[in-house]
Amino acid sequence: MRKFSQVDVFSAEPLLGNPVAVVHAADGVTDDEMARFARWTNLSETTFLLEPTDREADYRLRIWTPGGELPFAGHPTLGSAHAWLEAGGVPATDGAIVQECGAGLVRLRGARGGQGRLAFAAPPLVRSGPVSAADRTAIARALRIDEDEMVDAAWVDNGPGWVAVLLRDADAVLALRPDYAAFGELEIGVVGPHAPGADADVEVRAFVPTMGIGEDPVTGSFNAGVAQWLAGDRLPSSYVAAQGTVLGRRGRVHIDLEGDTVWVGGDALTTVVGEVAL
View 1: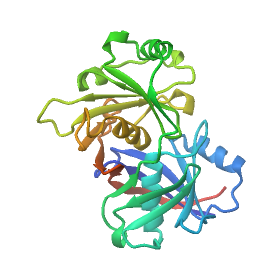
View 2: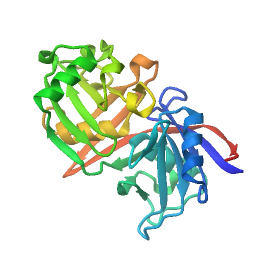
View 3: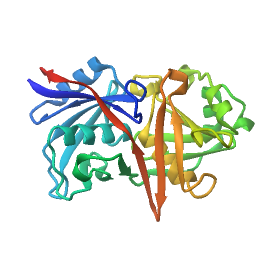
View 4: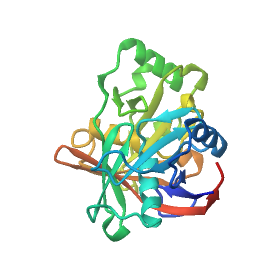
């Protein structure tokens, strides 16, 4: 039996964020067992905490969706760090955590004494830049919108494969009813600004049918990529993104651009604890 946690991420209120399943002390669990358990939990991500292989890391993390393994994902990074701290993990440097994962080493902050909102430093993009005309046509078809409704689009891929679309406003984002059959291999995220005075600066949605789910409730990796694309330019250097509204969630992602680093933060609450047999 192994210790198990389920953590609600990007919400200060229980059951309104994005849950991640976390298996502790998972050394010895096989790839097949990890994949099978991730399919069984049927959450957007399930993670496995292991001993690090890099001396600079505090722990190693493997991240699985129902459709396969990811090198990096945002809400599992925050939720797993939260679970590791709650289980008695002590970072080598107080106030900082270093996570080893498929994308390399990921830095987190806000963990001083195990307290405070965690944030991770956005990893480098593995693909960035403009979207081709053919891809714009495919994206518009998948989102069921006209191409001229897309204010802009760019690749913001930090591992999962994200392409980002900027729409005119939050209402346009909330109105989307995508055609999942038309996505092919695309992982599409969409962002649009809220009117002044709203409790969030932008509305975000992320569509990931290739991962075995349709719409992800709240997505750290996509928000990281959007911030690397737009923060300090068409979006403020610090802002709050709302996500999950259409799914009945109330996710809030806190973005801070400091120098060349984008920090992606969110609250986390443990909602389930126990043991699991794998």
